[in-house]
Amino acid sequence: MLTSKKFNRFATIFLAILVCLTVFPILLIVMASITDENTLLREGYSLFPSKFSAGAYYYIIQQGAMIFRAYGVTIFTTLIGTVISLMLTTMLAYPMSRKSFKYSNALSFFVFFTMLFNGGIVPSYIIWTRLFHIKNTIFALILPNYLVSAVNVILVKNYYSNNVPDALIEAAQIDGAKEMQIFWKIMFPLAKPVVATIALFTGLSYWNDWTNGLYYIDDAKLYSVQLLLMKIMNNVDMLKSNISLGGAGEALAQVPGTSVRMAIAVIGVLPIMVIYPFIQKYLIKGVVVGAVKG
Amino acid sequence: MQTKVKEKKSTRQKTAPLFLIALPGIVYLLINNYLPMAGLFLAFKRYNFMKGIFSSDWCGFDNFKFLFTTKDAWIMTRNTILYNLAFIILGTAMSILIAILLCELGQKLRAKLFQSVLILPNMLSWVIVSFVVFAILNADSGFINNAILKPLGIEGVSWYTFTGAWPIILIITNLWKSAGYSSIVYMAGISGIDKSLYESAALDGATKLQQIKNITLPMLKPTVITMTIMSVGRMFYSDFGLFYQVPQNSGALFPVTQTIDTYVYRGLMENNNIGMSSAAGFYQSIIGFILVLAANAIVRKLDRDNAMF
Image 1 (cartoon, rainbow over the protein chains, first blue to last red):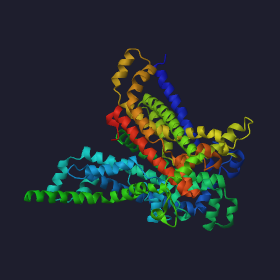
Image 2 (cartoon, chains in turn green, blue):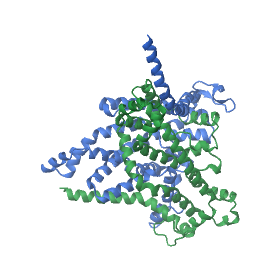
Image 3 (cartoon, chains in turn green, purple):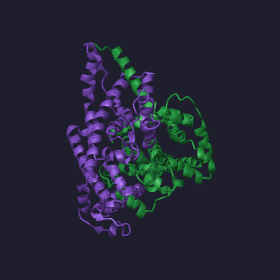
Image 4 (cartoon, each protein chain N blue to C red):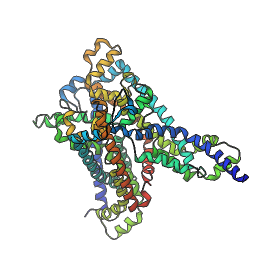
């Protein structure tokens, strides 16, 4: 018979194994990035390499103008994209939540329908490139796909409907506040808890995005971290050729290929690892709220 | 009469500013979502880059005829559906198992620690995941060939051309990335179950397994059904990153990695075959739409509260 205590022990052991399997491949990359290049080629990826080297990171710091640039692009698009997204989302949600707004139902349907049906990437691509000419501009990394998500709008709308009493808005109106003022001074600050969650998810999707870059960016100057990583993975020599454009010269003969690639991957995830413990709580809360009523 | 006019004016005054606040978002959705919907008609045209969307010539169902006479149409449809089925079945089972075990550990520190680690892969982009997979599968120095097969005296396998292995690799990769994250929803479900049910079951001498079988699983059933049907509604879609970047766009693997999403991408960006690509996109949009509507209709029958509309 399976007693409570035994089951508890089973849970611990089983989950511990699962945790090891989850961490193992990530650790493998981290170790590879600090393994001596020749050792890596000779012995392969290992958690316990025979010879360590900080060469890959040293190399990145010295030659990695392109990597730092990609970081700049990613940080810029993440910040700007998230801020604009939060504004558009709350500004759509507020009128939807107002019972006295004649078109609130029509507007809700307009937003909601985008969850059910979409035109797909071919028309989107042609519209963004032929009509708006965003190819190879920074806009390509901000505008398509992520600015307004129906799920987020509905989350904020429900938050307003459930937490902000009509009397509050009426009182403000009696005091002579205009709609715009009511939104900025009262409603936007009130949405703080739900906005924090949305900011998190939106920020993550901008940080991790590489598909917008894949479709719309050819110019290496506008590579984001993820896109750069993707290009590096798909083409080993690309890194060498592009860094040489940055003026690295003949030192390229001994580019420590594999370990540098892994080091860049580590640098790519590092910011997420660092903030992860702080955001985890909101993340879990967001999933629960979003899943219960999407 | 006069009051009516006044009322009309005052509602307009109330409507206009609210409409203005919503306007930027409306414009964005029109451009980003509605314009492409309208652009679906492109599937019935012979797209000419010089002429643009509107002036390209109509060609009726030609694009579809070409698409469905190729083997590709069958392969990508089969792959998309079968992988989704595997993800739904195995993913749900795995997430529920993780959720039950994590809840069993309750508030213990190790439960929090375990959960943090299990959710972590979901924060990584598919590009990073492709590096992770590469470290394991890479033919020359990858972990499997070097650390497992070599000591056993087995010759290394060229994983990125070995089609037989990829259904399993993709399924494991997907579970690795998302099972921990999906378990959050089920954990919320389990923590909502009345504790006294377990107490009285324990008093009656029910074992842990009996409690799980007779209390936890039945109580989770509505959540499982809703989540499953929602995934069924998305069965015509796939994670582009998983099927394109993780196998490193390897041509040898197309028979087992091509999904509708990768096909559309390759047609549009790599093979310059916009006709086929837009036909496949149209096919995905329409069937996807029907599946979402059907899935929702079923949820609504079973459990009104969880329906989307």
